[in-house]
Length: 306
Image 1 (cartoon, one colour):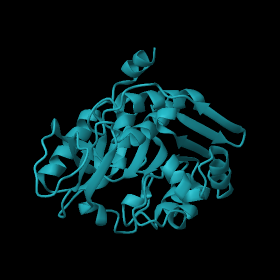
Image 2: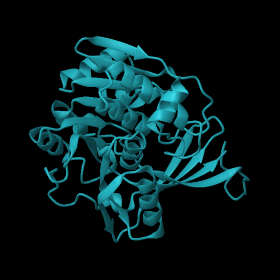
Image 3: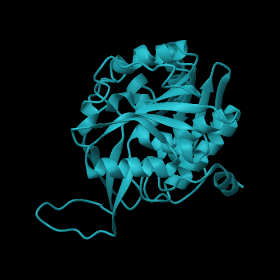
Image 4: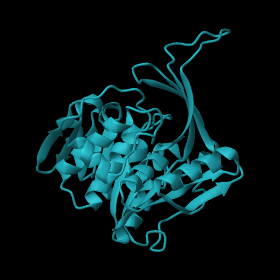
């Protein structure tokens, strides 16, 4: 089966739950403190690989125990890490405070995310061997990808790869200034409601899709959380409902949704079926603590859908 080449950050998450508020100078007892794989690139590639589609990740971790733990979890999920660098700066790390309803607040140390892709990085045919798609998970999270994403996507198209990009959050609040030049080279754009509003100034899916397609993106997939997702193409808009579940931790759900969507496409599923499978993977993921702990195999995911 043809695989997916993924670029994105790799993070070691430390998740604490439940945390409703913080009292400075005091101690708050919690039910769990968990170490988990995180990061947009790591989560997305893990979802693709767990669903039985080859995934090769390009990124970096530090030469430290957190880096060892991240690589080990990627291997458990079946991700090809041959293009993951080990750098001297520390592995990117996030402390996530998780409320009882699954909402989160993050404390993030970028670490190697400040250094990776510092050279004149471009995908090559050797990197993409046996892959037919390149996906960028959150160009905003990696300092050296912010300005390079358009050329990376353009080169991928020249290599004959399909392209996709998951927006995620821009902590520097530059949004369309950074993302806009990438859209003409992006066949599938994933974003959630908050990100879509930041990019377009609208929360209406039809308006969002029109504005993003006007900038060059071909297919817009809007992640709507408990309301499922919307697929917007030149032929119109289609809403795919969510699976109702009780959310424990929403960390990584959007990344795993994107990975599942791409894995389903690699398995030749039509867009509505890919969206339904992605909704299921997201629903499974939010019922466990950690960005990838809810992932299941392709067969087990289909069995859960029924």
